Image 1 (cartoon, helix red, strand yellow):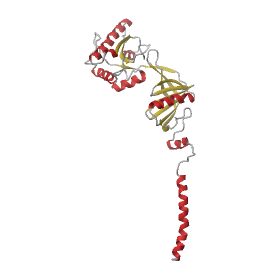
Image 2 (cartoon, helix red, strand yellow):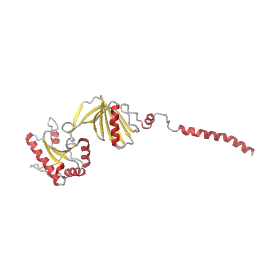
Image 3 (cartoon, one colour):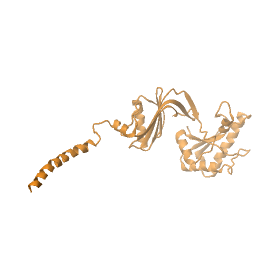
Image 4 (spheres, helix red, strand yellow):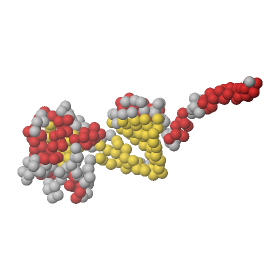
Length: 301
């Protein structure tokens, strides 16, 4: 009995000491509430904080990239003719992708407000998807989606402006109505290649059925959107007057086909341009081919 009491007296202090130490050990395993959250995030993701443009409050970095020389196309405001423009910037590159507990519109508004506070001037934006901004030789392109956004930063001397004419894969036709919708949201216009016309410039529905079906599907998916049906053409050895007359008949022919297939005439307006919007000054064969096109565009764009 005495031996049992002696064993109990020997074990009890050890048990009490273990109980007292356990909370301290558990507390040591928890994140330091007074620590720097950005340092903790850096250790977890391997991504340092983007110095030129900090993340929005509550945004969590999920991926990052870095390179000494990358070229990025920065979207700019459309020109006076409605064609989208871009600026190609090459230089030191950093990329961050963030998750954020906000909807797309709220994130867009927060970024628009935050950029001037980091000394950036907004060059162009398309609500709620993209923002282009500049601070001297440093350019930023931000792409926004639901609950996330990414930031591309290029530090370089950008000197090249270019018009974006949607010459897809050597003048290929649109793949589907969703592709047209995306281009219309971004650029307010979309070029259609491959439509076949008769010598009298009437539309050949049999040889253009797939392209016409895609265009018709887009218009049915967007029933409240009025559009211009533009026609463009360059004829080697021809005259400006002849090309204008050809595009007048072709624009009218496309409108007539769409109306015959259920699109209200009030939504459509034919606009012939002849060779007024030819792609290249040197009239190279590929550019001449790509200038022969139908475009749909939003009025006023």
